[in-house]
Image 1 (cartoon, rainbow, N blue to C red):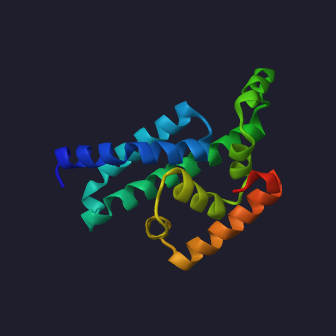
Image 2: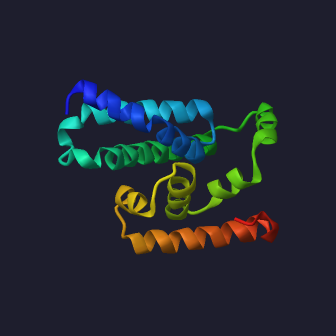
Image 3: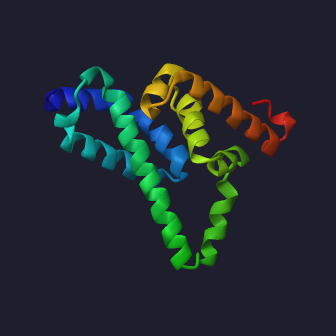
Length: 157
């Protein structure tokens, strides 16, 4: 795969990547940075892609790893530093669903983000996460049950 084909394929999936990163990280700037870093890492490691037909799955996996890396960094930072009081203003733009999704366990959150916010099919989600489709279906049901409980039955998820 050459540079031009790489660029074309990245452009074709950039919106899906951004939506997934935004749901993981909850910040536009962090999501853009994660997508940029994932694309950079993918370009650097393009020779390692053995099957070009799985490019999108491969790139999405890189993005998920980048988002998880950022979340780990945040947790370490939060333990070391006190959050400034000005952060309280950010809480006004948080939606209950977004917060509920962020509180899900990682394996459930990944399925929900890819299926409902990045518009991946069940098969694409399974390929991206490297798990069987049945596991995706099970995790999806479990995550939706937890979200219903947290958000209340009127949410109609």
